[in-house]
Figure 1: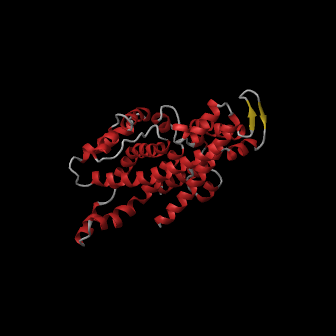
Figure 2: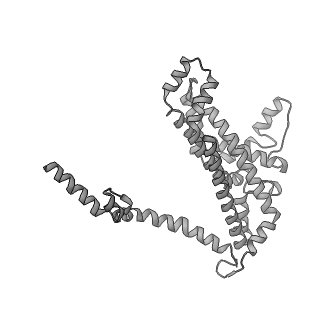
Figure 3: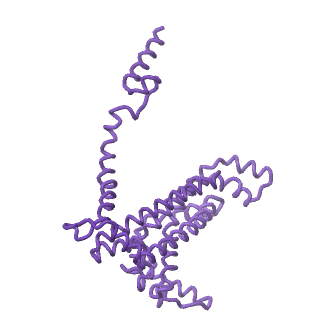
Length: 315
């Protein structure tokens, strides 16, 4: 009887601490506790100040013209200019090409490397460390190394191609080669993070699946296709969305590879580079923010579509 009385008192206390629905259902509801919102307030305040308010400010500035101190409402004029600007269309096209190639090729290569390292590859731990190092290195520093590798006069890439009777190619000064060079750099930059996440997923797969497959004489490809790949779909979905968003926001790679420029004749210009030039170089603040809003909506739309498609493929 005493134990039942203590349980009754505990349930009553929980119901009194909750609100409305919690009292009626007799279940504790954390989100209805005032103390929970008090603990969340610092994080919510930081998110509001540094994420939500700047986003609202971008939308407001996209509808304004003039200087930063003297702005006037111009309606949709900035958006009309941005959509009519061939430079912006070129930037969006380059960004889309970069994103689709880097995400698709990068994930395939990352998966291949992760599977090899996770398998019985000799010295796998050493290779894991080697592939992890670029993730710790600054993109600017890696860009300086790539500038040396792709140099048209003394670059290592041209030296290797010369051994096969190819080249030399002026990767950094030829407008036709600027985007392929940037894409190669982007793929390399994405490998480290992808491999780390994929390795964690591969090591979380139950080994019993593979033991049963070995009992039935399954080949390595069959085990990968029927066990590894289905188990890795959630992680691949996560990585594809994250890589896609990061690829659409590419800027540092362009700056580092082409020494602060967007290639020769802006042949490798991207959407973020366009926004930066409009805002900080041309001082066209409204046009720059209009381009930023368009880029935001494009990323949002593609992310939603990508998530829906990947979820359906997973089923």
